[in-house]
Image (cartoon, rainbow over all chains, first blue to last red; front, side):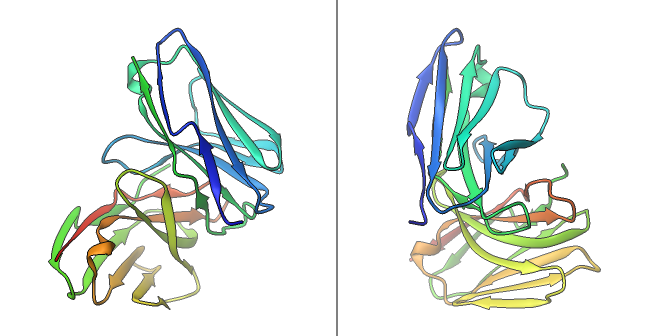
Length: 113
Length: 111
């Protein structure tokens, strides 16, 4: 299984809502990533988990809260988002942090009203 | 993190022609990777070239890397309509810090 799955595919939420994005992989990868991508822009790294521990936080606002419950799952909890947070959120995984290729999920298209 | 630059930003060619995209970056790297993205969906890994390699081939893809000029190129030969997508280079730095993506080239293959 060389697939990274993400749910939901689309999410519309108000600024006062709390929601979560989910990501799952069963490739035995020990590094997992969250990226944010605005339209016609490249992906921007948000968080990196290595062996279920937060390794990198690219100065992301606290309204985004990542969680890695186990080696196969990665969540992104959302609270009090702003309309400018509307974007495609991509999850990826790799064997580890030692410069390997990353496998991406299809993304969650988030719209904040 | 500093993004790389890719050129051209957009490229439109006829089916069967070759497409060349360039990428420049600013920091020392462990490796450089190329990804394809169709219509704002997930990215697909195409090829990885390590800092001690100069050229790599995979099917119709040819990648070069010049670390002295901090640049890379991706050549797609005998292009097909299905190659229409956005192509991104991504650099993996010497210290593990996640990938930094270039701005991307939007490639359109005209049938």
